[in-house]
Image 1 (tube, rainbow over the protein chains, first blue to last red):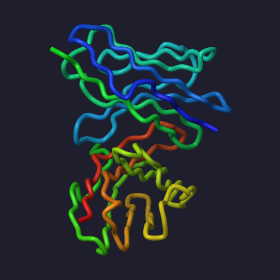
Image 2: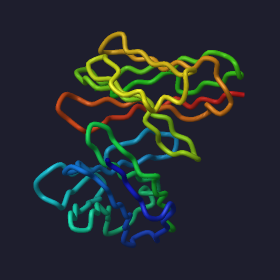
Image 3: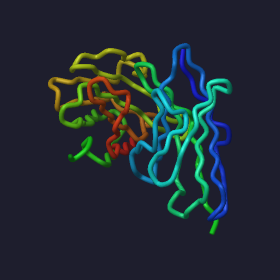
Image 4: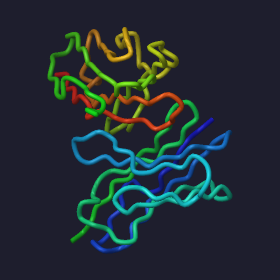
Length: 110
Length: 113
């Protein structure tokens, strides 16, 4: 069975500060892992994904995530937050379907 | 590419009325997913199709909900009769063959009064 846990439903950072959004997964098979972003009143947009190969994955808008099998984690990071990063972020694990976490709302403080 | 298209974008209806939500997946994609998003329950997978065939409808809340995919370019999600607790944003997503990446539509915001 697959599942995802996102620690922290709300995260606030100052503009220019490091962004760290946590995601831990459970999977009975080698996982495919995803981060999606949802801006207000919009659908989900793929930020990045890990399937196989390099464990550090780079996505759009300067975000990256690292697959750590030993920690069953896939945390999302960005070195310097921008106001436009304010959104809700969803981690997901896939077998045949996508299993989404409950989301983390990121607030960026000017 | 136009992306996944959903209509209507907003729907307000009264309890007991029939509601039909529509989705056009990205051309060439062969899997289609319907999700519901609410504050209380987050994102829930309702049903998904592969090559127009329903594969897993275990997420469909009850018999009031039904979904069809008559061809590769069109799907509907119907609620009859609708209830206030059905108020949510309904998303459609599609994937291309061999890929796990889902592309989401903009959603339909449903309010049942």
